[in-house]
Image (cartoon, rainbow, N blue to C red; front, side, top):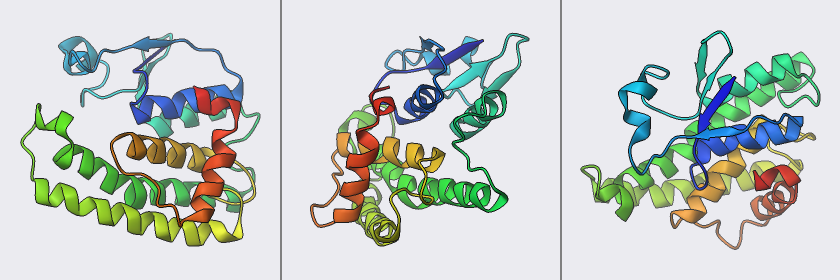
Length: 203
């Protein structure tokens, strides 16, 4: 199988690398040069019609895109250690928190990157006022997450899961584009230190 991705700071390919590292799965990433727009090439669009990465191509030619879907495939084929929960309630909570991280925390980061960052200004038409408004939206999302993390060590509960991987890749990418975690959010900062200390965070 072939995993198409891109190095740091691209957050979505990193999610899969972190997941594979937690599972102990060795699968070298085949780089797609985003700077050269290789992800939008006809060759890659044949694998992923949206022209996005990561994309996993199985030995029979089947392709899987979207980070959570790729990681679910590896969860099914390599169930230990479990990263999507073990009981029905745990699995539901992990799914719930993945969606919350993506919609509430990651959406304003993506909007800021798309509409306010100088790099994307070279490639796309921006609405800068809208882009800048997402700075406050992201900070509000982190304040909400900080309150949630007061009661537990990880995003979805007592165990490290895919929800933490989604959150870590988002927070680190946000910091890289100029949206740091506010100093007064002690719970988010404590969580970030815990998950960043895991060897998989270097993936």
